[in-house]
Length: 312
Length: 315
Image (cartoon, rainbow over all chains, first blue to last red):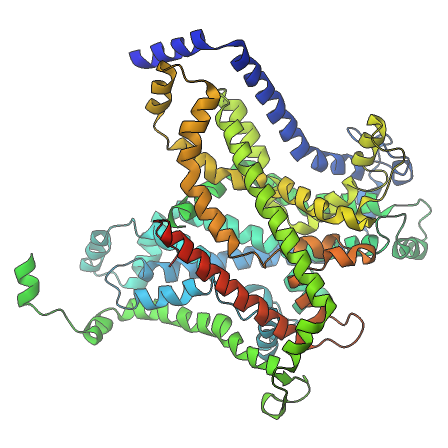
């Protein structure tokens, strides 16, 4: 305690004007950095509540100039949005539950040093981090397994990944063998040990895995585009957002995408909605779930990262 | 302990396996799963040596030898994709490392814990949104009525608003900067963790010796994160040919295609999508094999470098 006080007193005494200037500059710079990181999200949120015609005049940055709910009304009038949001939630929830359970189920025997197949199975999985057949052979496989345009294409191919397995295994290695031995003496079978002992003790790692897997599912659009785009029922929010971005993109960022004018005309909408405003409301709709869980769960993101980093 | 192990023979592999049959049933189905989804596709590499037609079954395909590889190496589109891949990767590599280490150093110099925590938490938020969302954000920020145009016109740097994404020469910097925006906070975590393990007595001793802040960074902090830096650097050398698919694919438009198509995008558009013609599975697979083999060599080489420098190596 004493040394600490002296050293901080010493530091204060030693702090030169240059040091203090650096501190101030550092704080200003980091505040600016935080602002630049967050501002785009805020700006898009503001834009999504601003009248679309008015937004063409630009300079809508910090607060809506002409407030409206219209962009969201337009968004929610599109039946595809609810359909795809439902599918996004469904695949995220079921994919996460199954993914976490299966990862732990495999990680548990692999975390036991006595298991004779531990090494070969680990190597089998870890090698996939470096060796991959690539996009087209993977596509051919998925096609020949009959997964195309089925819900299972979202769940099965990524069910257990090497990286998640590694994180789970290194966590479970910390659980002592004696714990399992004593449960066995009490007559518990391995499956019961897994469900009643291992899983309750792995809460931190389950939280971490759930988050990584859930974010992966929620953010995925490529699987939908490649494997499920012919089945409207399987469309996800990120894929719908990607399609909207694509129509805007073809114009190179200039003006209104033709599709929207057409869609407006069909719906008999008088007010003009720019792709920017629609995209803003849709982007927000697809981002909000992550923004909502983020503050509560970010400590697990970091925790999982640190566990992974130890092994790296 | 030693004599007993010598006296009681170790139970045989098969006996142990029978004892561990519950573990066996938990693990082996996943091993089969892994073989099917990760190793079976390697079989598909044979497609690169055939003139693959999806309508015919595998064995009645026509074998064409190295035709597709010859085509690959003589087509300008492939070399353009190689150039774009290397430029994107190197930009991401250099800028990614510099910004992540810089951010970690600056954050570690902050004494107010609350402020440090807040900035750090905010910094990795963009990492968790998809590239679709991020691309929408980038697209808006760079649009005619977006904030960047307004700012630069207001500052007088630019006379009129312009469509940045339609300018080929700006496409690489846009990718690099948006990549930093999305990833720098996340990439800084590992350095902050390394800095947190430094013994505070080192800094106290340096204080006593009258070291300046920059001397402390130079002689204590930087050496402490050196091994993390080297490991990550070598690791990323192995991924030199993976410049990412989502980002360029989502941000590109016809005007900047020449700068946007990297190897991953090239395999996708040539092999699976029908951009100007039929999708060509065989040609796309050949390009994929090229990428996989070169990447494997790079990873093997970087592992060698790690081991030669006294590191543990990856495998």
